[in-house]
Image (cartoon, rainbow, N blue to C red; front, side, top):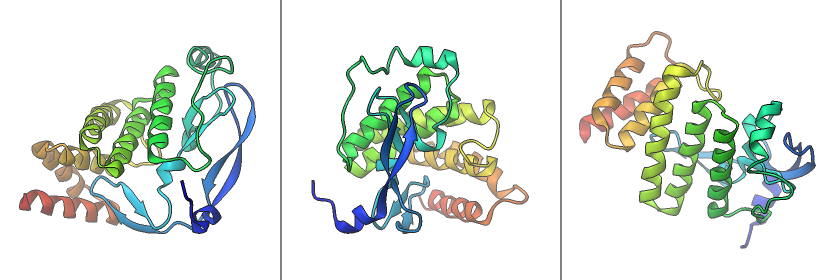
Length: 225
């Protein structure tokens, strides 16, 4: 796989310590300001000039294989370690990856992060977030069936998280999260549900302008469809 010098220059080796096995290791991360936003899909899937951040969004310990989103990497409770060691340990075989992962490798990393997320009994919002990212990666591959399946899984989790998790959820405020549910519902052709969530956003006081603009654009798509 040929990687351009521009992409290599936009990445650097960031140091981590695995919270499961305590090994230190390095993983590629994107330098701030080196990857320019080009466009955003209706469900907030962002496209960038150089690198798809989802390729580097999951941190994998090369020693035990523990996989986790970079934004949720943190200490584990003793009970969580006990649960996770049934899936991830130095004594168990686990995949190896290229220095610059392919989309297929990124999907596998996300799926293992989802397994770890479920195993350590993390909040449903995090599980839905990972499923959504897997759907986006399948979109990049042009695999519409797998994209749809993971969008459906994400939608179910997002709806459950909306009623059970406390905000912010993975950095999203309530109205941003509401828009995300509406947009995923739209992608799944759940138009009436999409309308209901959009109505909540557009009638809300103090809605962030960016989210209001997205909601108005999505409402126009509904009208036109």
